[in-house]
Image (tube, rainbow, N blue to C red; front, side, top):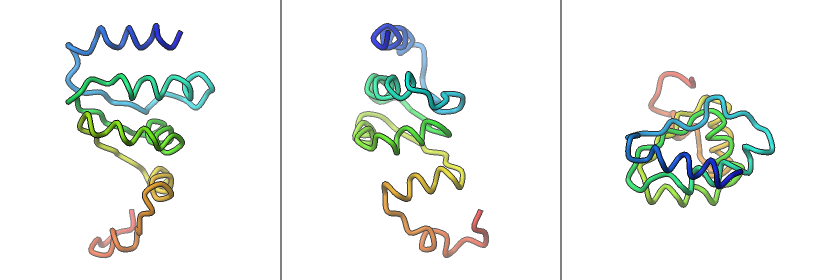
Length: 104
């Protein structure tokens, strides 16, 4: 079944310029297995925007960040998702936000 979905996504590769991955994915076992296939089969040089559960799954399977060498990636985390990223990237949020008036 995973390969079937991957094949369906490949059909769209020439028609899609950017991919938004995350909102509405959910956190079930199937998506946990499918997500790496999705990321590994994104077209080279595409634009992929990761949000919500997309960021969650990236942080749960950090080896997928290596795929970012093949395409342009934008992450749009909220405060909770930043905490997931902070664990993986060892971010110092105080340093990042020191010139910002808000902690939002």
